[in-house]
Each structure stands twice: as C-alpha cells, then as structure tokens.
Image (cartoon, rainbow, N blue to C red; front, side, top):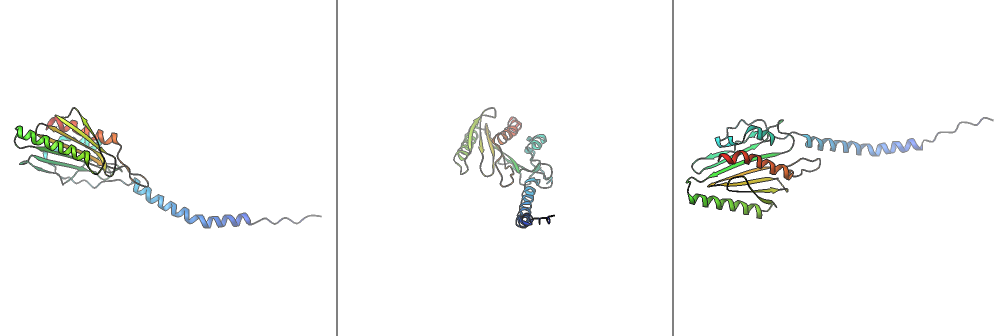
Length: 213
C-alpha cells in the first residue's frame, strides 16, 4: 500500500532565517566600519599647492629630494633674518601628489654674524645643547654621532609619537638642523616612520645642504 510522502522538516529553514536576522545587522555594521576605516587609511594627505615663496637659503634642498621625501609643498611659516643669520625652511605635503602617509620636513640654518673664534664657541655650545636636549628629552631618542657632515654631527631618531629623525650639524660657526617627521597610517592606528627611512631622509638632505653653508 503506497505510503504518503513524508513532510519536509522546516527546522533548517527556520534556523537559517533566525541566523540571518541576527547576523545581518552585525555584517552591515562591520562593513560600514571597515569602509570608514579603509577610507581614512587610503585618503591622500596634504593641502593644495601653497605657492609660498621661501627664502633663497631654502633652495639648498633640490626639487627631486623634496619629491622623494613626499614634502613638495612649501610652508609659508618659513622665514629669514639676515641680521641674526637665522633661516628656517619648512615643507609640508601637496594633496594628491605626496601619498597617504603624513610627512614634514624642516631645515634651519643659524650662522653667527661675526666669523671669529667667539662665534665658533657659541656654535659649539648651541650644538651641545641640541645634543643634550635630544638625549634627555621627554620622547626617547636614539642619538648617534655621524661623520662626513661638517666638523661634527649627530642624528636623533624617534619612534614614538610624531616619529622621525633630526640631524644636527656644526660647521665652523654655523649650525644646521634638519628634521623629518611623520607617521605611517594603519587601519586601526598610525605607526611610526621606519627608522631607516627617516634617518636616510635627513642624511640625503644633509648631503645637499652641508657643502653649501
């Protein structure tokens, strides 16, 4: 005698519906959060070209170097004071040209107005003060003496906070300070610039600046 067909169980279908109801909002929210984080991560940094006119001393750093370091936008905060022999050159980033990771470059040149032994002593004191400040500052730095730039030089590398490197050179009665700082973006938090990158950056600038001051 023929048997009536068995009724299909609806339990699996009901479970699937319940899971869909429970997890769809989670997936949607997760997707929105990921989309937002990825948007922040991939967003280009910088500002439109400032076209700011920098002091002539800032021409010591060539355009190819600025492009390589992703700091092509001259900053209007740069200044010169020939009476005191102080020059300060700052570069930030050009929107759509300098990538997604924040970078900043500055070069300051301080030349004593009187080229005599007293000026050399003053430059030595300025240099030692900069070195002591880098060694004992609130942000830990790795300080190393370097050769090939002027009479004496050191580089201080920082991997916390606004990370990067600072190279200080004394050449006679002139002190040059080169700073390159920034961060590398991450999906959830920013990280420091790799030490090798920041140290190579300040040394590249020093090779252009030191022979001409």
